[in-house]
Amino acid sequence: MCNSFSFLLPMGMVDAELIPEHCGIIEFYHNVDTWETEFYPIRQPKKLHEDSYWKLNDKDLFIRKMALNLLQRKMEIKGKHEELIFKNPFEIKKLK
Image 1 (cartoon, rainbow, N blue to C red):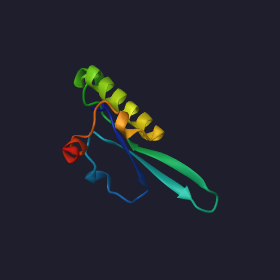
Image 2: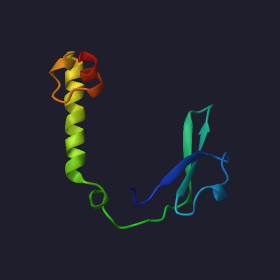
Image 3: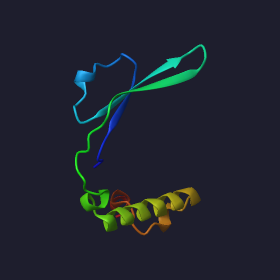
Image 4: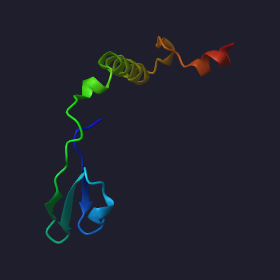
């Protein structure tokens, strides 16, 4: 889904040839004595496509799922599972 991607790796831990050519690589070194971390770009990521995220995904379905998840979390926080509009189908079978 993304246009470009980079791996953040500890310095010298993974050989750059093992990572696909289109992926970028950023290695880091953490000095435990000074608590400083240094980053070294090894390879820049390449763009895979120019398509936007919403051209590849259904925006309406995404918003509906996000709203349903938000509603379920809200009801879980309140402790009122019985008020959910979309009940768990397994719980319905248990009641019959």
